[in-house]
Amino acid sequence: MRVAFVGKGGSGKTTLSALFARQLARSGAPVLAVDGDINQHLSEALDPTAGPTAFGAPPLAAHLGDIKDLLRGTNERITSREAMVKTTPPGRGSRLLRLLGDDELHARHVRRVGDVPLMVTGAFDESDLGVSCYHSKLGAVELYLNHLVDGPGEYLVMDMTAGADAFASGLFTRFDMTFLVAEPTRRGVSVYRQYRDHAREFGIPLAVVGNKVTGEDDLLFLKEEVGDDLLTHLVLSPWVRSAERGSPRGELEEPNRHALRVLRETVDAREQDRPRLHRHAVEFHLRNARAWADRATGQDLAAQVDPDFVPGPLRPS
Image 1 (cartoon, rainbow, N blue to C red):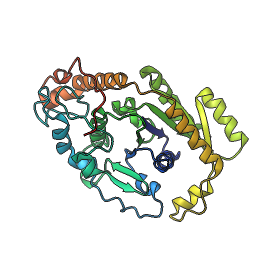
Image 2 (cartoon, rainbow, N blue to C red):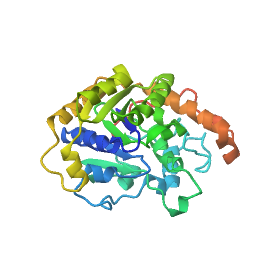
Image 3 (tube, helix red, strand yellow):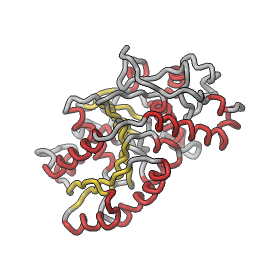
């Protein structure tokens, strides 16, 4: 299952992404964490005792051309890496990937941080300032998800960009479950209303996870604001605070461990709708083709859509 954590900046979505991924890994489940946030702090959240430079693999965005060459494979509908844009869907001849499979993309870009395999999109650097937006880096992740055929009992956990900025691409439609992390404040739940409307439009499962709850007043506020979409909540955590300082003390509190169990039960109760994921990939590819990509490439990119193709299960290599 593909799981996204979204929310307002500072809501705790990176922390929740890390806690959930660590819980999955410690249970023995195959899991890949992906840092898709412009701030790129998931590595530190996965291993609070390591320094900010502990993650040694290159970011996806640094090898976008190589990733395109790998994924397009022998697909005759894609004439070159230059003709392959971030939304290009797979077709016959494309290279499909298994989660943490034996391929050059995973070998180059994935490293373990603590117990969890991690892949990062890459941070903004000086050459990007005033020239490009962060979604140019997220294009590598979008292509990866378009070509990923994950199997039963496998999990991809992605820390998404903050706020409503996630709607600037079709990436928000590529997940089986989206958890929106919300603090018990008006600003904390403001992103929820935007996500709720878009989620309903595209049939995306969405649940709210309250965070930093300090008492019944906080919980009542969240229930009044988000109603039945409130799935569970985490209390304000001294363990998380000590971990954020680089020296975690004790262990995560039982109410918060219970909330993580609820998240996993919710994810495990769902069935992946692969045709829906591919249908959304095609829809947003056609939108982007009309809006900018046809002009940018000088081609009719609608021709890249293989009308009878839906990614299916892969045999282990």
